[in-house]
Image (cartoon, rainbow, N blue to C red; front, side, top):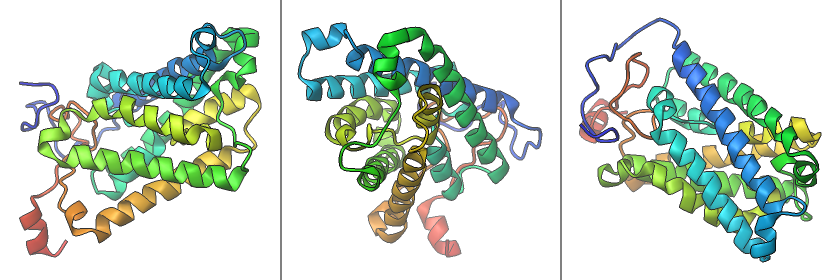
Length: 281
């Protein structure tokens, strides 16, 4: 059975299980910490003072694209790893929000996910201090508003997050694409960071911005990376509700990969479109 295939849930699934899914929350914390620690280290290496990458690739736009590709690649690797198998590799409060609003995740579980992601973002940022002066010169990978100002940065974050959530729905909602969902992230973030980073630094993730913001002292603008991603997520969900072709997409479970693994009975499956229509949903 393929790990990311569209098969029935494994025999270990426990529908309606009531015990607190601590392994999922711990897994989400660990995954988000890895994303922030490794991903922001890539930012430091590519843009910090005396960067060896800058010496070989002086074009800042190309380095942005490379950094976005590698950052997205980290997220993809986490998604296909054991961490992703256990928790679904949301790694982002607004991804959890989208799944919850889709009815794929219970509210209490979703709250635990968000708290774990925020904690993971902070814990993953602490080792960034080890980069010393090179890390400090790149604000330890913190996302800050560009010269156009905070509201333009928030608008940029909204647009980038809209692309993320809409892209997830597109891949997860099409059976032929579903198993390739992790492959979306490197290419999507290469494009987003290349195009949008001059406006906001391209976060799309409140947890990713929280940790480096605390470590670098650049937390005053964190509201940008909360408001913008929330607005982008709600816009993507609004489009899904309003556009018939988008409503037809089937988001089966609240996972990015390993769709058939659900030992805790947390991830619910959606009824077929015809059943939803018949029930008026």
